[in-house]
Image 1 (cartoon, rainbow, N blue to C red):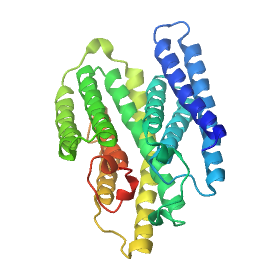
Image 2: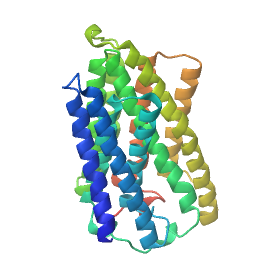
Image 3: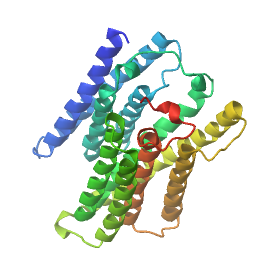
Image 4: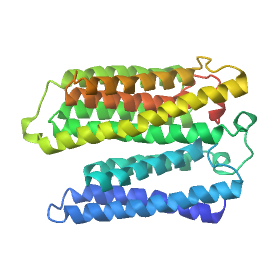
Length: 330
């Protein structure tokens, strides 16, 4: 990897961290909050542009589409997360989502930086990835994961604005536990059964406790404007992410038929992608028919975030195996 790429990627990573802290600090300065949010958003835009150039430069250097391993997919995920927030900021003029979006990007940069050097270097493609289907199938999936992740983050903000503080705390701890399982699955030799139990079992218990906690409302923290706004933004993110996920699943089936002679093989990652798709289809159905309150829909979006995380990173780090095991690196 060239020094030019490294400099640009580091610039994007540092920008996401700086943006995060400016977003956080803005909450302590009411009179200057809007100015600080604009500064933080500008810094994130700088990082987004730097990462865009870095990805293009990596593709030119590799002489192929730069999306073939975990490190490159993390760059794309961070890029889509930053770009998604910039679009939402321009459309809705929001600021609260900024610190969560920049934190997510920063975590992905940090995660990627900890990967083995072999992931950072440009290497020949493994045979399973030598296909024109790779650039058709993978980018829509990664971008959909980022948009669906943003939807879940908006769900957390909506729950906070509706006074469901206990539910937000439990849901946040659940997400952190899931991320912890992925980190341990990536960098340690902990028995995969324990990691799967931590992710799956912790998520189920956390979601059930969060759902039960929706009954506890802190009246002093209710912000009706933000309740409605972030409920709408969460839905808009899904409106973008769901079709991209659909395209990714369909093109994945076409690629599978081209490579293995079968459109669907019930591979663990394929099956999890279908479960994730069904969860967002259920969200859209429930919202259109108004069968759940905005707070319960926000929690459904958080559930979707956990399923997205499991589909994207969990199956290659928690030892579930399958035909997509080439995504592993240990």
